[in-house]
Image (tube, rainbow, N blue to C red; front, top):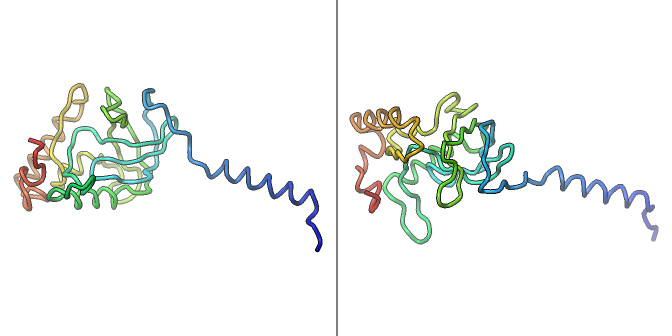
Length: 183
């Protein structure tokens, strides 16, 4: 049986090492560090208002500021009314797509997630803000938390319009069923 030449084995080993470095994800940022606004890719949609993004200096969970979507089923708890629909809409709009992330004034929540607004660059939501789209579609309620109030009036106006027109959860559930125990 003929053995492969040593040079071929070394080249193959080098190719494997290089491929692993190129395909490996960006290093996770320190969850305490500041993150600058910039382009990102949505790696996953965890629920209607929580994504996983990759951008310069950060890869990890992002919580969209200004809105609250109904919960999906997790940790043994059932989904709230319209939780799966909110998550599915966010996934249809943003999963795998390019976005612009604008971190909020207070950048982290108690879980270490990046707090930010998200604007789609491409896809069905291109050029639009996710929080405003969720609010107007009846997929979220407003969630103004100081000091991250920059877009609170615009989001509140969109939620009020969705309620009035009975869009989404406002037609199917109402606030008590969509947000049980989250008064």
